[in-house]
Image 1 (tube, rainbow, N blue to C red):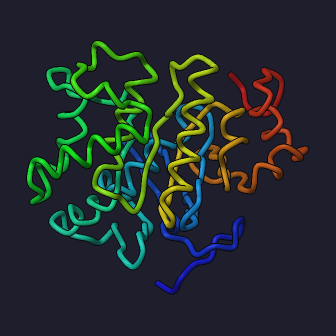
Image 2 (tube, rainbow, N blue to C red):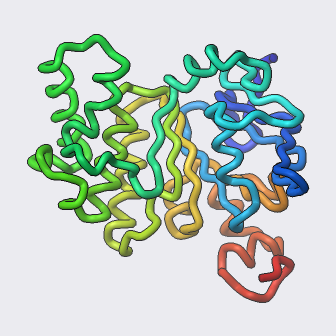
Image 3 (tube, one colour):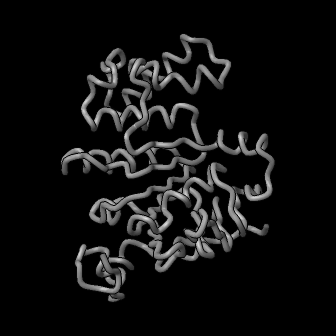
Length: 261
């Protein structure tokens, strides 16, 4: 596939969805999705529940296969790759799960160290040194020996981010990173996402979010999914200034508009 340029940022696309369809039984979730994820930027995917946001993300990890279409990560088309090769592609990703998905029986240090101990040949002292450095970067210095049950919601999210970054991924996927956080912790998490982006040149971030205040503050590009396709895409300024009824209703949370409850 020739290099695709993202029409919003003008940057080369590191991930491209081309006419992607996905159904589960009679439920047609993705209906010809076309989306470019620009390299080295923060792209936020928004939309109502059930519009295909999570399904979109699962495809780029190779966790789901499209019924039709192509999904490109660099020069690799995931739609035609063998499972063995998909595992190699997955190693290029870090994922920050909505609930952090920490192992309850492991302390913070061991949770963050887990991917390195499983997939690298670093000596344990090197692993511990790297993990301690990452925990300091995300504001968790001194919390290494705490169990997940001893952490606040914001601390759990930070530990999840540290684990996602520990293998120096090319891509970071954030699944509703501010869900369940109060406004102050939400602002702190948003700043952490931006700081991570700025401190790691070239990293590509994809965020799923319903928090429009956060979206407008952190995104380089926003893609709005409606009925399994990209209905609108643009910069935060485009969405702020849009007069389109779909965009206006979603940004304001109004019950009045084309999207019915």
